[in-house]
Image (cartoon, rainbow, N blue to C red; front, top):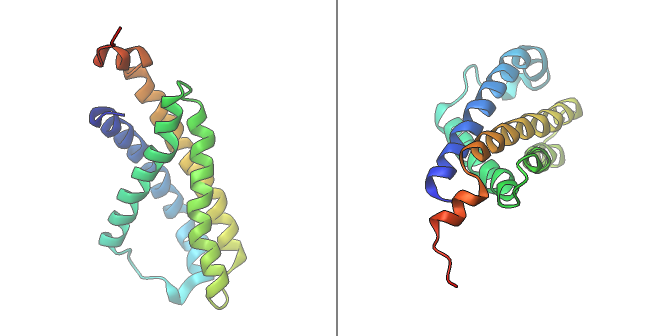
Length: 148
């Protein structure tokens, strides 16, 4: 995947995932997270760690879900790859908390696993479909001269 293709895939995944996550957090912060995690939560999120998370996570979405789907010429596969990547990433956080923190609620873990799986799948699929519309496998063949 060349740099322009990566940037298009990244930007698309970012727009979709950030919009979905903003809607999710707005809808659930006061109804799910604050009642169950109350004293652990900040009044406002910390921008630097949030920016670092989204920057790294979205790179992971492109590298582990979008790029493999496009390399196989099956952009629809990004939905499944994205779902699996989202499940693994969100499970890493939530199940570690479940294993190490006193009274970490299972309800939060289950909600996060479902959310991470779905939101990442949708962002990866949207990214792959848009990116595939601009770069076809034939475009890649033309960019690299073939030896005969």
